[in-house]
Image (cartoon, rainbow, N blue to C red; front, side, top):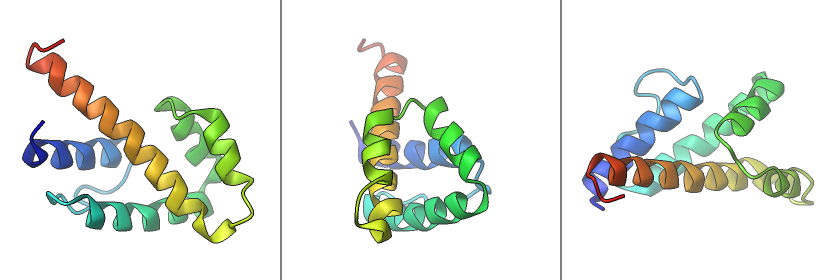
Length: 106
């Protein structure tokens, strides 16, 4: 799978699923700036509307037990980072699957 297609599609999915402003996340072909920016957005979303944030996690099918484990961890400062990683992991899986279907490989 080509990163030139993968990361922009990931950014689109994150923007759409989390109702972020258009081009809120950097559409780069490098996961690190995307991740760093998304961690900040996760922290903001959790602070502004925690219930809506949790509903979004449920809607995009993030594993509840992993979310619960992260939310109840002792290292509270890393919660947004760990949640962002979990969300990115899930969204990358969804993007890859959609690309495979689109290309007729599944």
